[in-house]
Length: 127
Image 1 (cartoon, rainbow, N blue to C red):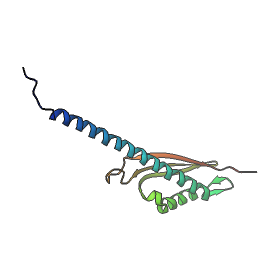
Image 2: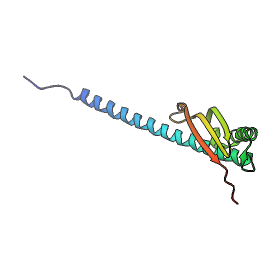
Image 3: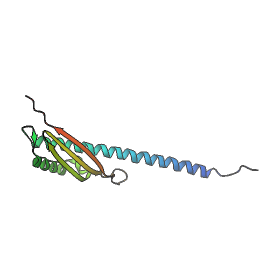
Image 4: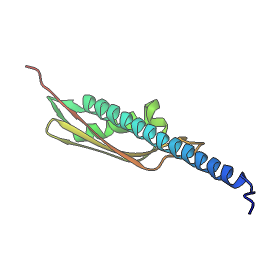
């Protein structure tokens, strides 16, 4: 019996496995980066809105919404997002934002999946 055969299928299989692992790692990395960028926009948006809507330590909800829309329409960091949900609310001295968005052009011009992040800001009155 002869053990003759081609190594080509083995090499093709290994090459396919390497490419799948590389593309998988790239996709996971792009998703992590998109999540961090959306979190940063949420953090800055709630801080901006909260700072401009606070009267005597308590944020006004109508002012919060107005300032949030202004920030999201003007901030360069928010321009790279496709914002699906931007809900802001206030409870006592705390403002809370829930931002759901897709980050544009993550991987080869493909948008990221929908990512939701939460952020909070609190007023502190210093005596």
